[in-house]
Length: 158
Length: 158
Image 1 (cartoon, each protein chain N blue to C red):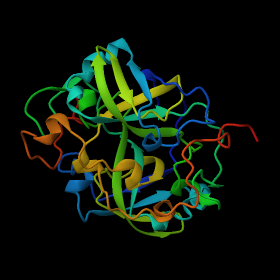
Image 2 (image 1 turned 90 degrees about the vertical axis):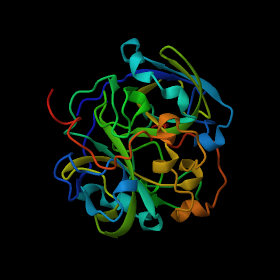
Image 3 (image 1 turned 180 degrees about the vertical axis):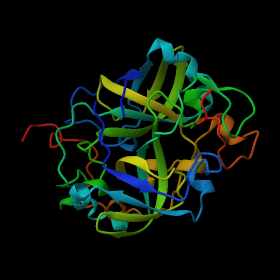
């Protein structure tokens, strides 16, 4: 299982503190996804999609804990019941808006990703497969805290 | 960027041919996700979620091509505008239904994943973050073929 970055994500977010915790809270935040030239041909037809999934390696997340207090709660939860960035395999998935494409560069919006993050994959967002608007969402249905931006809890050593 | 499997996915699908191409076409197909014991504590609170994202390593996909004819079309598309399993980093994401949990074992339904597939991560499905029912979906909005099960095009050598 060997990963290789296929590109890089450029965003205005330089550190985790203050970065939106989800694309929903990053509305309008624009950036650019630059695919390595050799993969550019694989972007054909992507302009037809309003949103795309970015899969990325959260290279600045600190070692994970199996119980943690997520950003939008006040009590400990199991790691796999949260979207916290510190995980055994720190792979992030973000559904961002696709604004345009120039060759191997994608202009995107609603970016909740740190600048310089290695890109692992791009997949088209398909509502038919990915949208389940009424799916019950446990503690996230009624979060204790309306926190929309990160702090340093998942990046600081400690 | 070192991946380690955190568990394994058990399903009735033994080979790609005939396996549903998305959870949508796998309704009722049940299986089990077995997390390594050491991660079991991270599953706390997951029962509250009706659906979960499984991230997994598509270990039987063949080398990728940047242009391919996807299952639901008749013409070539760019790889990153498809959900084909053969990719530079063959990481799959599937939103499956969570039926129950016993310790480190999750009973799930709507499985479109091959038996024995290495598990990389589990994330809760949150409609607020993940559901965009009206998002424009390019060629997938009006696919040329209503193909719901895979054939061997992404597994056979050649």
